[in-house]
Structure formats: structure tokens, C-alpha cells
Image (cartoon, rainbow, N blue to C red; front, side, top):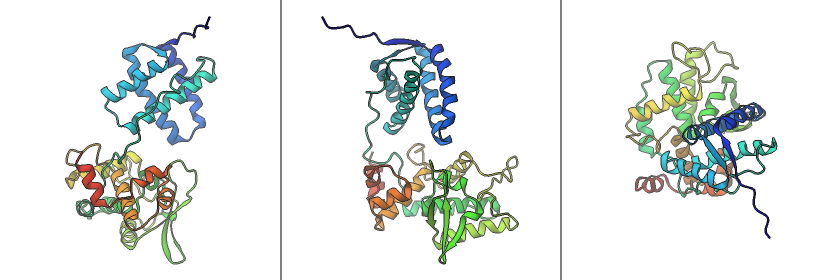
Length: 309
């Protein structure tokens, strides 16, 4: 006679919330970016539980949540994978503390790997239009222009720009470079060569900050309440989105065209200029060759493929 399988454990929302607090406390050991991602992803799980009230700790229970993410929230495969990864980490915490016997999400697959990027790549004409939309008549305008140049030409990310200080701009063997701290890194280990047009944009902005120390943030907030403080990723993102709207590039494509599209554009341009998959992985900190290979198309081909969807 075959032994009966243990029935899936049913956990109330209240019980899960209690352990969630302990989990968040445990997350303090993680890097800030990782901790923030897990916290945001799990908020969706607990919002879903508000209607469910009880959760069956089984693969079927996780599949129901995944269905919610897919059909109700209509999230992208990449986002679904992120949300399920956060849930797996939470469940492993519960297993480690004896609340669950096994992780019910262990065998639930995430979203299917996309064959194209979830963000569109901008064409050279669009990038020119974006830059032309910036009015360079004051410190804020020159700062925003320099930000857009650094993102579209050098492929610098929001977090890399926000973390940068003035002293990170250096000259190595007569070549202008910038030391940046990528997402997930604890040191400024990546060296970015700055083309002449990016150098000029940065120099013109820094003329407004002649008395600044080298350890001050490269990009400062110019708002009335936050003037003199380091720009935040949220603030920088809002400024870039402002110009994407102003230049009519977004044109209703809220999720397809974002500030990250500028980084995609820079990577696509580098690939078109002959960069290898390994070079793209190293420069943009891309985990897999399959993801880097998505950039191995011309900007025109990429834009055409995306626009036909």
C-alpha cells in the first residue's frame, strides 16, 4: 500500500504577513538593489492575498498566482520571472524556519525567455529629436542634455549616473573616461570611454558648478526642495520621460519606450559597429549570451521588428 502524500499546507494571509516581516528583516543582508526588488515583487503577492485570504502552499497555489500575474496584471514574461523568483526566496526562508516542508514554487517555471527586448530601440533620428527637445538655457537644461547624451551614446544606466561623482571623470593616457559603479557592484570597477560630444556636454554642464568638490555628485538635483542633493533614480527617470514625451517619441508607448530604451540603443549601436557578444556582456553586465545576442541586429531591423508587433 502506497503511503499517502502529505496534504498541501494552507497558510492564512495573517500568518504569511507575520513571517513576511521576519523575511524583510533577514533581507538586510542582501544588496540594496536586490532587497528593493524582492520587497516590490512581494507586495504584489500580498495584494493578491487580500482577495484570496488563504494560500495553499502547493505548485497549484503558485500557478494560480502566476495566472493572476499573466491574465489580470498582464505582466511581461521577464517581470513574471522576477515576481516568482522573489516568491521562491520567501518560501525558502519559510522552509529554513520550519514553516514549510518544501518550496511550493520550486517547480513552477517563470515567464518564457523573450525573443526580443521588452523595450524598443530608438533610431538615430529619434535620438537626435530627443536631444533637440532639451532647452539649454540654464543649469537644469545643460544637466538634462548631458544625462541624455551619456545614456544614448555611452549606454550608461540610471543607477550608474546617479552614483557617479565629479572625480569619476578622469583622463587615462590622454583618453577621457568615466569610472562607474554598475547595478549589483560595490565598487566603481567599470571604465567608460567618453566620446568628444559627451565630454562637451558634461563640461558645459559643469561650468555651472565651478566651485564644486570632486567628491560631490556628478548630477545634482535642481528642484526647489532638493537643490544641492544627489539626483535620485526616480528623479532622473522622470526627467528622461519628460523629454521622451516632449519629443513625441513615446507616443502612447508607455511600456515599450522608457529611459532604458536609450541604453538598448547604445548597445545596439555598439553591436552594429562590430562589438562581440562577449564585449556586450562585459560592458552592459548581461548575464547570458542569449540576451546579448538580441542586440546583434541593426537599429533599423530592431525598430522594424518591434513596430510590427
